[in-house]
Picture 1 (cartoon, protein in one colour):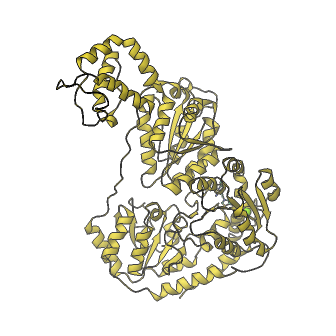
Picture 2: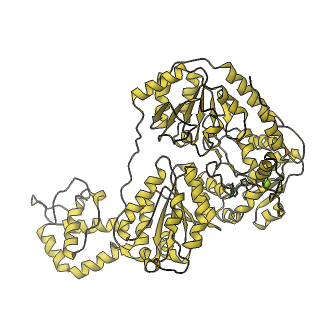
Picture 3: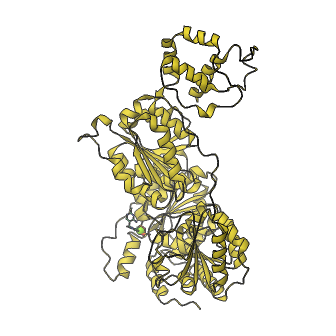
Length: 636
Ligand SMILES: Cc1ncc(C[n+]2csc(CCOP(=O)(O)OP(=O)(O)O)c2C)c(N)n1
Ligand SMILES: [Mg+2]
């Protein structure tokens, strides 16, 4: 910003004196007249024989004159050398400073990261900026925090690491954001360009490493390209489908002197919608179908299209199932909501798909749950509604694709489809699902049944509060038994499905929504994968509750092994004393010893001003009972 003022002052200096009409004007009177400083600036730059920086953003059409003759004499007398000195000091800067200015221009408020020797310049520039730098304890934590920040805000979360090992530690979180369609920008350091052509300390090609886990990535080899690179990284990361981008800043480039200003961001983003012809064809398909069903994916949430979805469902009485990452797109208490599909077994929601003759897939992402699970015979008529054309898959061959803004597409469909009555079949299915949700909700058995845990957690969490699930058997129970009422209140990693997201993700969620309750619901395996970030949470004062479902092993894998009729192998481990572990972090620890204790413990944990950890033994024998039961599932 200082540099912009300097440009203005220098150009104002150049404008002093008489204007074209010969009339004297004082500076104050011309306060509006930033005018065309680029002309003055160009004059100054010509005088100093240097390239003028971009100043398009300063241009306003009020004053239209070049420096007047007296001013030219003044500037010439002042001397090229003196001007160059001022210029160097005030206009030129380190490339790392330009990069930080560009990040500020993108609206970046927080960067999650862990420093290294090769990003000293960048850190110094960040220190002087308005951006908050959150120092983490493992780069994977930083990447997951940026990932969840991106999911919750729709703006790219930013994570930072050094070169080599720091950068490779980011990989899982970046890949998770990329496959789960969360906007993220990763910035990594690199060795100076003088040594990247040969074997040298901590150098590996990170750009090449990150290519398969990003939408776009690049190394900055000249400081002048920084404004373009930063703008492109954010633009690509945030465009549908969102994902991860990566910028590598070599040490010598970061320290180099440069000039430049951030590029303008698009003021407002308009997305087009399908034309009338396509909408009319889709409406015909819907009106002619007998048992249509909607499959709502995460695109509905990203596109802020929940209200439009509810309106379409209500008018047509079409029931709505959602993917795990689409939880909350359709509020569960709505009578047309059919809950989550995604268990890789014949779940009750699949029963709705068995019956369907038309599947309206809205913002559905194949990476979450492959279509072969709900269209095994390849005989469903599919209407694809999304920001982007569909992926090619033998089990997913849409009859019609409505590509464009989801919210507007749904509103157009709603306006034109015929009102209809709800099918009795789907009403029965809804009743079946609701009954299933209540099963074991009040079961006092110990260790606790997963159903009881989900029920008690739901009772304690408000509709706006956020549950972040880790990955494991507990995730399946969250998806099935923890109803969501609002978009973005249940965060599940289901594209990349990486264990370890919940604890760092909870920190980011608390930073975005400090007044909501944040729960990390996590397995004993995933909890210890990023437990170190509890120290980060305590340091930044972002209290959240970790509810650990303790089964002494990698429960989901154990479940799969038994279902595949092999003996459990490599899936058990010992656990630390979680209460003592909590205390070691200065957090509050609890151990559930009776089923009835969970709810009061949760309530107490959320009252704490510090992080809380609850060790809750779980009875995963329910997992097998579930799959056995689903095998015989019949809904009429
Ligand atoms: C980083 C990572 N490693 C391994 C896996 C494979 N995996 C999926 S679930 C799971 C077990 C999770 O165990 P735990 O966190 O204890 O949860 P539980 O299944 O017991 O509820 C494993 C190993 C994965 N998804 N992500
Ligand atoms: Mg476990």
